[in-house]
Image (cartoon, rainbow, N blue to C red):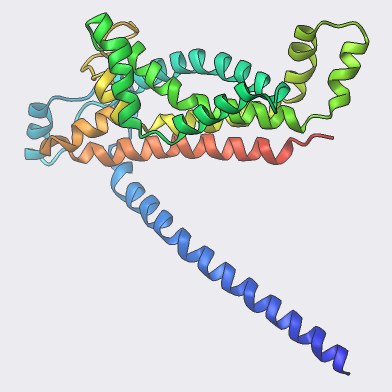
Length: 290
């Protein structure tokens, strides 16, 4: 009888703590739901075909539309193409470097040089984005004497590196050591084993880390203010100033006539980042190392 009472008490305590955890988890989700609701409520009105096919309107066009109680004309095409260009170039810079560094760290876990690299990686990850923007400004904008999409990509690539390096290292460390030993025993070169066996086996983890890194940089504004600067037209030249969605949101915020476009632009940016995060979590949940 005493044993039964003890078990019943423990089950009651377990259910109580589970309920408390669920309650506080729900409380932490309330701000997220409020933000999502506010963005949907105020942002969906401006989202139409023109929103994706036209560049941002001028302050005068927006003012005339507001005076006539009409929707603000134009869209964010220059921001969409600019974000695509800057992020694509950042991916081309960060992923090869990050994967190679991650491979080195996974193969040399205890060396002093690896420890230094890990320390620097953690340092970069904790560096404020505005500081990285200043570094990219000194490295790219000053020598090239011009703001450019390339300078913005360098800043975002620096921010991507820690996530790509860490995801590569941790994923490769989870692979069984016999996988590499078997490849080498069969006479394959180290390069072939890495490229044809290890990386394909770790593809799920690598891809998840890359998606998380991309979602990390998609909403960055401060580095691009110091490097890409912004542009009122669609630009595909990486050596010229280029706009992006976060930069447009900042410009809309500073213009009372364009403030309504903040909500629709923020909603679109949030949906893009949310999609990337959900995709990364879906891949991570399905990918397992046996």
